Length: 486
Ligand code: ADP
Ligand code: MG
Image 1 (cartoon, protein in one colour):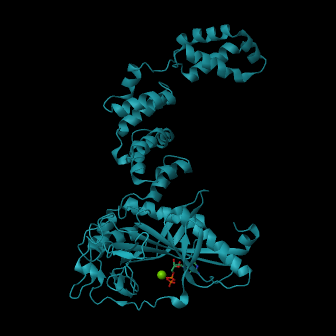
Image 2 (cartoon, protein in one colour; image 1 turned 45 degrees about the vertical axis):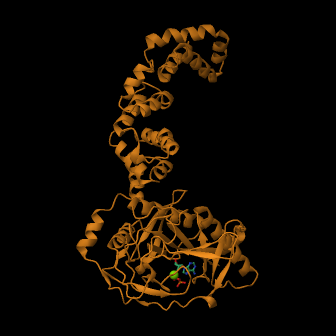
């Protein structure tokens, strides 16, 4: 950890480049299938390999996905964009160049709104979102001095989301990546899996004296495959760069790699060794021309987005920040909750049900809320039963709810009646029982009257036993306070 003093002296500056693999059924410029885990080199055509005489053909579904993301981030959608070749040699790159968008990306500007843990809000400014193709994969043969290449991934469609250097802490960077992951999943354009590499992130990190106008020299860190490692890598770089400057050494522009085991970064290549990519317009691909109508048709199909749902849950349903954040983590959960709220007005109770017993069920069974076994109407009836004081929450959650899951056709009330769980709120029934409790505990009554008010809990417990757990606590507590008042 950087000392407080140095953290005040030096400001951290981060810009992220996020690659999201698009969930199209074929590649960006070829009809090869896509699928994680297929046998190596089984999803490769002559187009992906760039054989002479072949021509790339743009997958419009990928364009649509990129535009969806651009619209969700309020980017400017370029009516005219184009593809360039980025030339470099690496064995996983079959053509010797990558087709990407350099000069005229499909989306420019835009922002991603974040809500941080302390509730503060931040708009992360985007520089651009562009389309490009992925490279293949090198597999280093275990225990051998050999590497193999799998071209299945070569040519897969990616979008790259590039932020401005506007992030100021590892927490902000992690929150941004989390929000991008949510967005692409809500939009249905990427599966969001960081383990399988569908979502990858490079971090550009620099430091400068706080208040300085110009940015410091940046270091690009690669190979963080989790949120946690992104945060660790940025914190490590912050400390390392400040250490260099404090010791009178300049930071050099370089690409570094993060080692998760050691928790540190190490140099991969310095600026002098950097490739000159010799970008030039790809002569095989015409520019992408988008019409207003087409963009409009993509726009009207956008789903509700996490940020908008968060606001709705806070402002319309009056939920606490924690609830609203948790319920919007997945689209399926958010939409289920939103529909539930059209059937009940007890929004906070509905949220407790979602975050408690219902989320547990989804986690335990590994299912999504899209396949939740109970209809929203049934959950709403269950909530109503508790709110009316017919059953306690714990009885509802522990006795009725598990029965409903097994038997979704019956109503919560039917189960409550069949299992004899309806709370007793009739005072002509509870009053004599309460009197019995007090008569059986004369000493405790004395103590209560001399000030030990906590004993009410004991009396309530005894009454619960006598009533077989069915005494309505509100009514019972009123009866006791009347009986004990004189
Ligand atoms: P390059 O030409 O080296 O690729 P770019 O200007 O395209 O650099 O920026 C790439 C990424 O690096 C962007 O996300 C940008 O916000 C970020 N970035 C640029 N300069 C800095 C800096 N001084 N400190 C931190 N991040 C930076
Ligand atoms: Mg760049």
